[in-house]
Length: 141
Length: 141
Length: 141
Image (cartoon, rainbow over all chains, first blue to last red):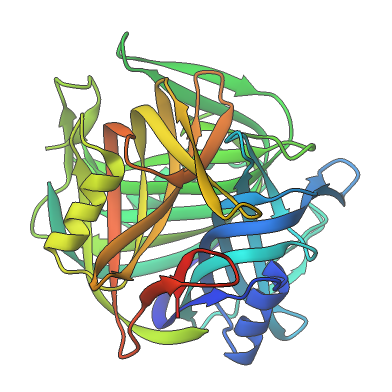
């Protein structure tokens, strides 16, 4: 499925040291009532918690990266889950040697510094997440 | 070279489980007749085929990653090659331990889930790919 | 802090083989007088120089990757530092085996091929970088 959408607001900002990366972005999407959009960010974190979806067991497993990391890229989107704005993001990190790691961004990732943009989209078609039987994930209908 | 372009349509959507990631994005760009644009995506794949361009031999080599991977970031663009819309994308993946891999997206990458956006741009200057003698790549003239 | 901004110009282009990746992007932002914006790019480099910010010592350390690499993703922004447009970007690379590396983009990264987009934003609130005591970084006030 794919839909033509209209550009809405664009929000640019930064998060505070100590913020939870996912929670802070989620809060902005909620308070600004963004129902559809894209998120991009870069920065650094004090530690990270990333998810990997086991496609066979249909379950997320989480990895804690307990070290300071550069946030190379956060690519995410905003849509509706359970009637509310819901942020979904994947993150790529690098350690002091430049080696890269990443996964599905989970709560528990602590911001050191983070600069982000959110592009809102307006759509007549709602982008609502619902359980998808084929994958076990909450995907757009 | 760089050109001021105008925003056109924005398309947001998701691919189906089992889709070929590059082919599916290419199909949307073709059917929507997108002549210039950007693509961003995240998701998960059942397996991946990525290219590495050998700058000395001027030849792509391909690596098959025969495992389930998170798609951390797909960054791509759309322009014209041989008179038709052509999608070019680079992908970053992570495995179950969070280790990251990536390359030039090749056909043979099977989608598990994928959420994407395509931003169309309108330009008086055509963005047509032609063989570039300096690199051996098909680049914008 | 986060601010609603307005879309401005969009610039799409490519860099030349041999360009310094950061310097070339910086030059375009300077010559186009882009005071706020986002940068995205993909391509390949002949060698890379990436920074890692040591959050304890409050100092950047640099790693030279003296090999040909695919540029999987460049995610960056433009804002004002010392009164002038300043480009800040993080980069993810992959080597011939598909292994990913990355960090804060430093001068000394030589382009093989690079396709980029810059989205300008217009804002009444200036995005000026100033020393942030909490992190030792030049962040938006």
